[in-house]
Image (tube, rainbow, N blue to C red; front, side, top):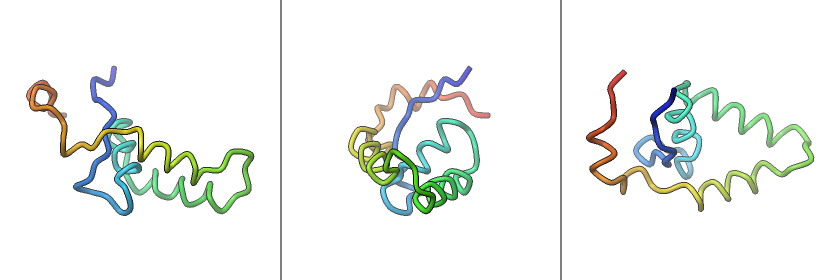
Length: 77
């Protein structure tokens, strides 16, 4: 079970830290998430992925502003 919280990782960001935050949350390589976003932007889909990225950018809290209580309970892998 994943005990991580979903935050934007602004220390490893290219644009807004959304892809890096999702990669941290799902514990996968950030390159895979970035490639997924790029491919979905290039492939015509019914839901605009750029809009999804912007919504996540607005909704996801900044990881740099994470409360200290959450960092203390993080279990290193």
